[in-house]
Image (cartoon, rainbow, N blue to C red; front, side, top):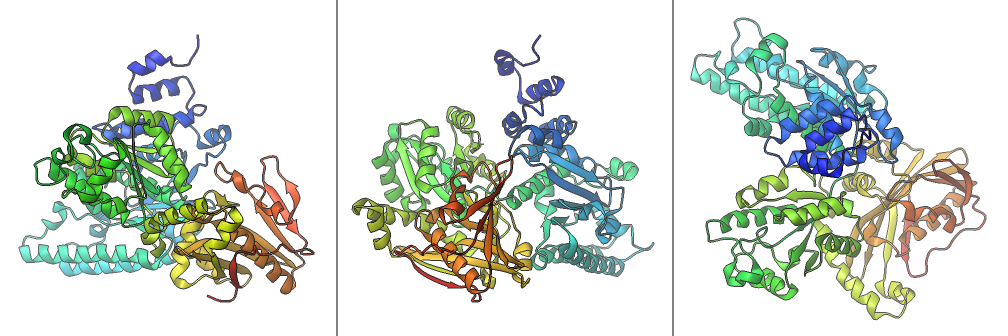
Length: 639
């Protein structure tokens, strides 16, 4: 008898039942690409966090290495967990939250109350090579465990001050020696703590000192690039009790499963951002998504996004969408409607917070929405895996989820008051730091319309590039560009020759190392300034210059910028005494288009691995020329 679950049986089962069936059949590793879709369904359920924790208990039985061995492009996450109390309950939720994004978990969990020792000992699992996240779970009880008996507010304040200073030192040490990102969290203050003081004044002073400690802890993240602090305040406000009192007393479990489940989601979002998998585009429906009503049936006067009881909820949703768009997220529309009435509403309807200029693309037609998303992706030169799609129609959501599984689908429902909560639940657009280019991105993409018009009005690509008047500056990275250059390594997937992801601390370390060359690529043209669009990382190795990576934003493809950058780099290498330049290509599912980039500039293949990785060398005898249409300046010493 076949162990496969039949389609008819699957249709009757819920996602957790289907996952159990895979587990019983021993198919989780083999069918791992199907797991994220099952978990996405669970994430939409009313008891999502508990359901995901149940799924995680099934998934932890499967070795991450076995999953990775069966599927190209699947890379496990190495996470080390330590803390003050018992934190084992975090692992099922963290396993499921990472699996939602196709990432198997390899976890190490430390002993009870070993957090300080683990952070001090550079030989602990937190410092193990390859560790991406070092999660150090803190709780308020550890402060009170250190107080004398009896204690007063001054005792607690001294303990909090000392703890903050200790965490500052430990974060600095991890920043110097740790391989990944250290994650701390703010401390919840419980009523059982404050009520130990019988006078209101002392309680108020304790609360003030506690909030000052948490504020100081949050500010540490601004000083230590490898530190991230999760604020448990919003999590506790959503979940209710911080812990189960009996488990805390008898089992030393100081953070409850509900809090840990939501913390696990925050940790998974962080890892997703660190791996450069932040979403870039939000595509929204219109009818009963941005406004109350159906434009085709009710007409412009019959729809509302303000002034009515339900309309106010849509008004709030539009405000949140606009807020997200102001921070570099590209906004687009896919709606079953006629184009002109839609544009009329976006231009003139008094209820609209969002206007036509807020969107980089408005697709209002009667074509299937999966096709519309492909069209938007093609016009923006982005992959659909960078898209989030929000719609109130179960059919449209199901269509996109099934035909474009790489798209994150936000299933809105008939209750518009919940639209904002559903849109923000998964932090799809989370990034470590917002850059100046992020805030300008939507305008930069909208200016592409002018470039497209110019392309269509010229007779050839050569005429178009000459008329575009591209100016390129390649020079050292300025301090204000550090976050942007790190972001490029995290978020660029297509023109990324080795896909080496770097945090700001990694970029800074290379900038401070005299053997390394770190260059920013900036461009502008007749339609505006594109800002920092690329980066180049290289280092001297004897008489060779080794290019570790070259990256370029998809916004400026096919303008000769990459060829000009490398041509000037090769000339610089020869002028500074290098005898050869080496470079590499490491294949990924997204960068196959640049496989032949180095050979196109005169590099010869030196080695090819069975996995398709290529190493190249250029002998600097005959150098390529900078494309004639470019105005290019190259100053590796400048910034």
